[in-house]
Length: 439
Ligand SMILES: NC(=O)c1ccc[n+]([C@@H]2O[C@H](COP(=O)([O-])OP(=O)(O)OC[C@H]3O[C@@H](n4cnc5c(N)ncnc54)[C@H](O)[C@@H]3O)[C@@H](O)[C@H]2O)c1
Image (cartoon, rainbow, N blue to C red; front, side, top):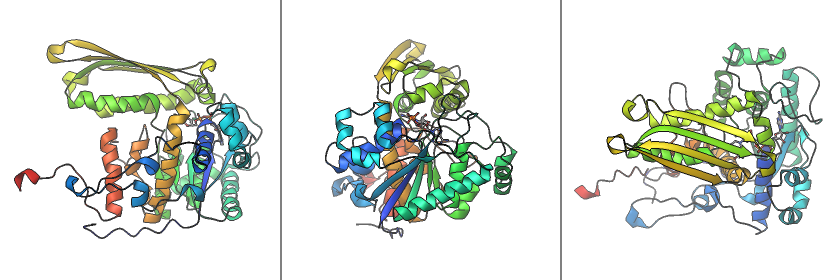
């Protein structure tokens, strides 16, 4: 039984609109997967909201409901999808081009996928250099484009009779930029939109439009997007939850499993060399050094923050860490990621670990998109606003309040996520610090 008062969470009634900038490999694998699961054609493997349980109370209580039965989440039948892309291809055509899912499966869900036609995108070639498409909004200032996106959002809400919306960026990785003066306050940002400041990226315009429309926003790519004072202030002022950045799949997922283990056992690490080959459109975009720099920043920061060389200089001070991504078209979405890890143990004796992960990027990312949408909607109905650190579990570079460092250890992240759900329902938080030995 709950021991505290549950938090007031509004029910998940009506349709939940899912708005996605970027109808590419990840988003179509996600949408197609939801349609397949709804028809009993597959299982939502990898999704906590669909498959995981949550332990409540003492270990002896035997209470472990499914998360989806414990907190009020939107059901898969209540999701409606829409989005924007620079290519006019429907979600069916984009999924067929991405070649992640088999043609036979796509045929069975062709009808709902074909109905999803991307709205014209807000796009700027300087931010994503390797792709060119005709389906873009061309006229007016950046503020005019933000207003056009807000009209798209309102139109989608009305046309699909949605009671709530969530937006998640699944667009290409934008070129690396640091925040500048225009990002420091909402008034400067809005002034920047009016004069089309070149430092305002397209993804930032989507995030602004979402927040102004009261729509929670998650960022699946490493772009800056909404991780700066102007939009964070806006999210708090409007009472809207936000989270990001960069889905934690593939190689970084492996890193965040292993590195906390080395540190837990006080094993040293001399070097960690990570390389990838990848042949999808994401790989092509990441060939551009500017887009790769955005990715590199999020991938590199993980080890430093987990291993804390300032606290353990003897073990991690001289760690050499490199990350490479090479575009190799024959592989398509079936990425291969190699890690060579040079570790050392007792008296400094060296050892090596090799990982060869033959993964499928979009298959790993799709369940994260689903969970993020459902949890962001839950956060909104719970009245949570600003950065949702409890969703760090899903990200390579979790956003945090200024001055805090992100928590990367996936098991701590999972505990934080589940404890947030327990808190919502008035259940005791589980810290694994029970004092039953002293009873
Ligand atoms: N697959 C993974 O495991 C994974 C993990 C972490 C992050 N990501 C990130 O997720 C994003 C999507 O990955 P993907 O494999 O689907 O890539 P993708 O290239 O297949 O799809 C991205 C789509 O975004 C579109 N796009 C680019 N700029 C746009 C804009 N301004 N507005 C609207 N659409 C725009 C592109 O035309 C493309 O169709 C990438 O940024 C990628 O780095 C993916």
